[in-house]
Length: 313
Image (cartoon, rainbow, N blue to C red):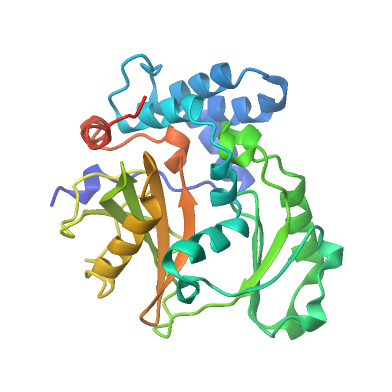
């Protein structure tokens, strides 16, 4: 295994002071931040995404002959505008889609779906639940005890998410027509008390080829990538490795087979699962991992992973 000290990456900014420091010390981050703020004014999806790629990867993409994984993701943005993808990324509709393929036993129960926060019938909800918006990333509120639940803070966060046009962030076509709603789900907790682990399988031309495990969220997120023999892959992307070793999940082969079923007929997709007390649950389908704008360390892994994916032009 390669030295982790060479693979560590900056952690996410969480405060105004962190953002100001990153703006001063990292002009690339500042450029990305300003581009996102100006997104509503930039009408050309092509222009926007190419500059976003440049600011993230530090070069412009070759879309005539894409070779790297990130270039191929950008190519996919421009060339696959299939309406069915909208259903697959809608957090409410995707659960129904996945249930049709892998069964309802792998779906976290839905407690309700509403168009606005004021429509939520909190009296009908259990003591613990999770609220999330159906169209974006990050619009999540967790209630562990309804008797002390902060309705004001939850309302503010979810209403902000409902107003957020997630498509404008990265111009990912599947999100363009997702209707912003709020979904309530059953609160899930693993009995080990260490929080839920994400297991994310990258499938190319319908076949799982690698995966990563996300741990220690949300305080100090770590990503560890593995091949399909569960060998730790010697690169980092987005977050550093976990401090300790990670054991192969008992359910690894089952998750791999479920990912294969959900990826059938798709050029490329990331299929996410949770293993909660030995039961596998569907998480989500992601067509544009990091939106194709996050570098690999070492950089050669970008092209190596891209070679696993044959574009269907």
